[in-house]
Length: 159
Image 1 (tube, rainbow, N blue to C red):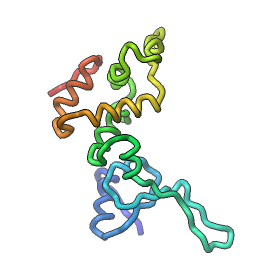
Image 2: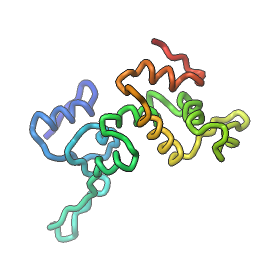
Image 3: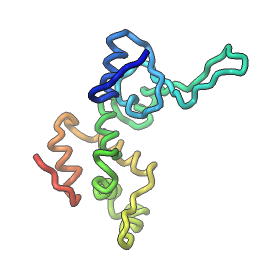
């Protein structure tokens, strides 16, 4: 089957998935983990045995991921956005990520380096952002979240 996407290919694939009653998605794109898909499998880990009788891969257990992060799955999109992406890059989120750690954090001394952007390690950022997202009173109020996230940033937050 060939499928042409004219808009957001992720949304179109998920819509096609739901319209046709599929039970699982095989892909290699972390954005699909944000959608409430019953079963998500790794195409990257896909292996066919030498005799061609066995096909194996890994399944992402998103309920377990949510539990480990201390998040509800409905909050995955805001969590992912606050980790950064091509639209909201590290440069725009650096001040926010450092603010989550605070001045007493053992890594705070790394924050200031001469003329270069220094970010906290990924595992530290993931933990801090998941704690922040789980503490948001109303995650649907993106104006309030945006003002809080960008209050220390050089990025202007337009309302």
